[in-house]
Amino acid sequence: MIVRKASTEDAKDIASLIHRSFGARQQLDPPADADSETVESVAHALSTDGGWVAVAEDGQIIGSALNDRSRPGALGLRRVSVEPDRQNLGVASTLVSEIELQSSVERIWLTAREELPQTVAFWVKRGYHIVAMRSPYVELVKATSVQVRVPNLDDTRTLAKKISAHLVAGDVVILSGDLGAGKTTFTQFLGEALSVRGPITSPTFVIARTHPSLIGGPSLVHVDAYRLESASELADLDLDASVDSSVTVIEWGEGLGEQLSDSWLHISLSDDRIATVNPCGPRWLEAGLRAELSG
Ligand code: ADP
Ligand code: MG
Image (cartoon, rainbow, N blue to C red; front, side):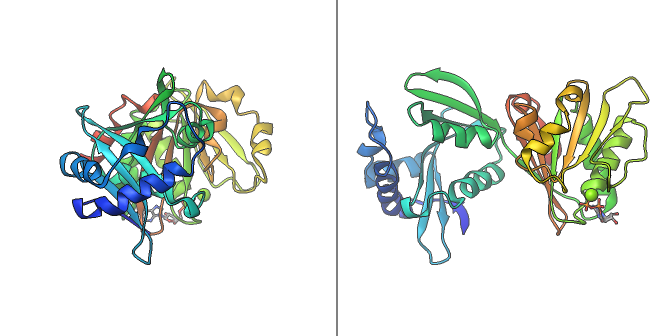
């Protein structure tokens, strides 16, 4: 599946996808105004503000979203649609994470219907933060993610240094990526930049280790969740007790950050040495992380 910008030629496919996608939802009162969308209205929206499509291997458009550019510096998404028989297969997730990366804005906002708590929960889990409730609409906002190439150790050190400048006590950093992707190395450079007591090593038997600050700043709590069997085992580590006074870094922590804080920074390291920095939750809305890391 690839995600690309939509052109007006996609209007017919997008309009019918919107109808199938919104038609598969429960009836709402008042009904979603997506019902009244036509090929012409979609074509008009695409020509003024643009949009996005997710295209399956066979060429079929299985996901789409329309842009709302009425707010400077932020991108609004509306009519986020997924082919009904492809739902719950990660199409929506991939669509929105790709839009975040490709859109070069600081923030993305959207609205969801409060009568659809699963939809609201979908966005919250991805780091979107509820900023307003205007019944029946819930407005959510998220800082966008950014990719940084880190082909050698110096690049990782620079990235860690830039990120460390934004970190304060209470922040949670989630690291994901395969074995050898550079998670521990990144944590070491982060510890260096934060001036905490080392050495930071791969925790083999010890799952969580605290590195106190040498300069009166926050300590760094380094967790390796690789051996944790379940989210409840993370709860057993009692990180809640230290999270407020520390910067907590969790290797293999994908999907666990939400447990500790309403905000977390997810850094995903790939084997081809690309770091995707994904700021989740209200903490990062005004942080300007994207501007700094992409500049
Ligand atoms: P992980 O904790 O993700 O399993 P490590 O941090 O232990 O991975 O790194 C594995 C190896 O990759 C180490 O030898 C490390 O020096 C090297 N490495 C990490 N980051 C980079 C990078 N950006 N460029 C080149 N080598 C790197
Ligand atoms: Mg490691």
